[in-house]
Length: 332
View 1: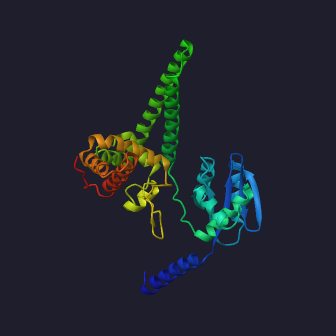
View 2: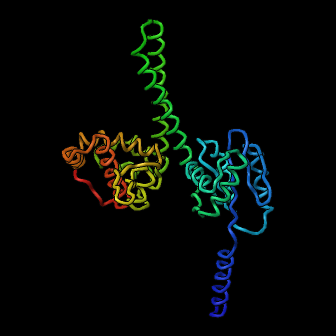
View 3: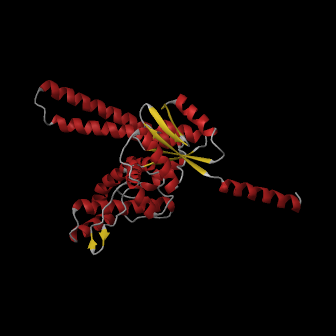
């Protein structure tokens, strides 16, 4: 290739990038419910089925919009948004799944107190324009399967825990026998899920390596490690402050004027925080470093739960460092 051709090619690429950069980003708010999705498009609202046929109609409507970068926003609605999110990612549409609390606070800040599906869709579009959130990264099929398996296991464990608690209140023999039978059934189903989780982990070499690395830290066994990869896939890819914020373990200031309040954690991903809390209960018994850290906090008068949260925060920092730098080791 000649020098002139190279210059021409570079100039063309630069022009394309500049043109893309200058294109307007058009934010589309979608309120998702079990049966329908309400879409706030420019100048009109669409109510479509929360199913493949509705998604196809939405895609056609998005393609008919003026030349712009389309960015869809919806709320996390307990799983009802998953099929839509997967469909949009498959068709290379930008998407951000937003925490509902953030959207509600934004609506209140605009004086919008009423709440309907159509209002929520418009609010989501305005939220995007005002806050320009980063688009979510598409999830691989393995990641989606991992999250589904973890959610199913959590549901089964909650049911088992509830039945075990109820068992102590029973007096009739038939009720006791039936409840024990149900607990045994739940035990078997949990084991089935765990076998599927282990099999899935072996299919993804990077997961297997990360699980092995995480287990080098006392207090972390494979269930915790794999659970964190599902609930907190960013682990090992971002800095310690960002990962603590994602997990909801970053202490938040409560100061105003001369008042100095206690630092509290809040928000974040409850699943990841729960796993880290459970791991901390084990770590303060068997990990010498974290055990000593916990005892120092208690000696200073720190309440037990607050000290455990601090241990969970420190443990998360160690886990993040361990994946970022495989040479990292925590003496144990």
